[in-house]
Length: 120
Image (cartoon, rainbow, N blue to C red; front, side, top):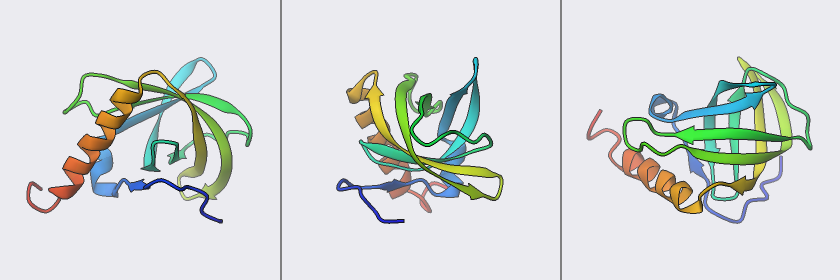
């Protein structure tokens, strides 16, 4: 796959996935998915449910131990690949309810990543 992002991609190491919660809407309910990486314009995540390329889905991002705010996103699915445990979905962030909270989310992620090994 050709990388199309021009901004910095923030990889979420597997050890940090327990601190970051992500959910996507599937029918009438939100289900847990696992964030793989993100930028301020797009993200990739592991989902147990396949979505269609071109579809737009609602997602929630949160860091329960650090922030009380939940970031609500609309994501346009651009690509999908089968993976162990489900599907890796990649998409462009089409809408975010609060860009300041998305930036805060990025800052908390960077803080956790910079201290990895020092704290745990």
